[in-house]
Amino acid sequence: MKSRGLFLAAVVSLSLSLIVLSLPASASAGQQKLSASERQQINETMDSFVNHVVKRQNIDAGYDSVTPAFRLGMSRKEWDKGDLPGFPFPAAGKTFHGWIVTYRNGNELGIEIVLQPQKGSGVGAGSFPMTMKRIHGRWLVDSMVPGAFFAPEGKRARVVGTNDFLAPGGGGDGGGGNGTQRVPADFAYVPFAIFGVMVLILLSAALIGGFRWRKARGGLPPLPERMRTRT
Image (cartoon, rainbow, N blue to C red; front, side, top):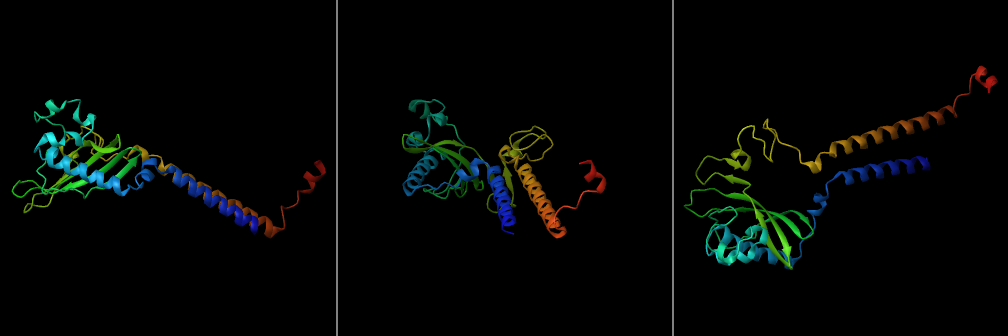
């Protein structure tokens, strides 16, 4: 009984290990916590970025809130001309601390924020996935893309995503040519891992059943007389 219990424990441990290994690294990385000082710094960066870059107001003040990659190599003088990268949006308010973390990979951070529109702007709220990078100890905005837009207040409820702007059958990152959603590559092998765990459990049950049968019969059945004479 003791050996059988150890065998079952080993099978369960192996099964759990396979499930953990099947999860993408980004899933665990996304759970990495930010320190209080990091959150404060990100809040300050977000306030500067949204107020100046997203709203397109006093744009020179937002130059230092983004990475060189976001600026596309523009100097401050070129930046101040107003032809900025990033999606413009008439965000309401002055502080923008309601972001959530979607992943973290070292000095790279994925966040998402929902911005509410200014009254009278004629647009609804918008959801924006963003990437931030820590450069020389500072968290800066590295990218911002529109994720989804909600119907303006008083209009029929509707959510418009970026895939709605793609031509039918045109593919794109969000789906295939037939309009179906693609499974992210990080999760493509998860069903195979789960299938492997199921096979292990079935094999374990078969082996345990064999042990029980041998114990009930008092061991393996004797060889036929003819085979014993040959040996």
